[in-house]
Image 1 (cartoon, rainbow, N blue to C red):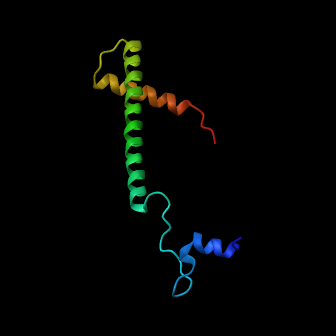
Image 2 (tube, rainbow, N blue to C red; image 1 turned 30 degrees about the vertical axis):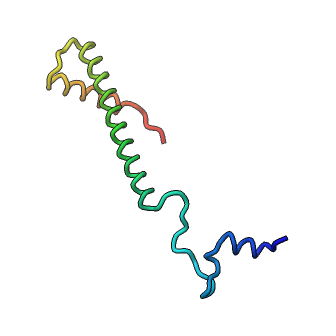
Image 3 (cartoon, one colour; image 1 turned 180 degrees about the vertical axis):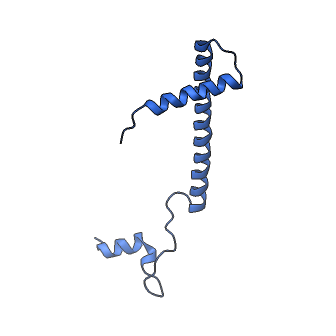
Length: 97
């Protein structure tokens, strides 16, 4: 049966070397930091686009409902009224925490 220190030396070769103990410059787990950073950046870009798209979709739907409810035609004035109404609704909501 091998001793625990022998198993550790074979599992972690950077712990000792011909010049004595040394530390690894970087332990590779999965991807390199540059690849991981790229993946995170791309994921964040996709998330921001998705969030912007959903906001646009839901604002468009709310605006269409506003136009129908107010019997207005889409215009700059109607959109300003929509924003004013929307702002007043959000201002009245109680904030938690």
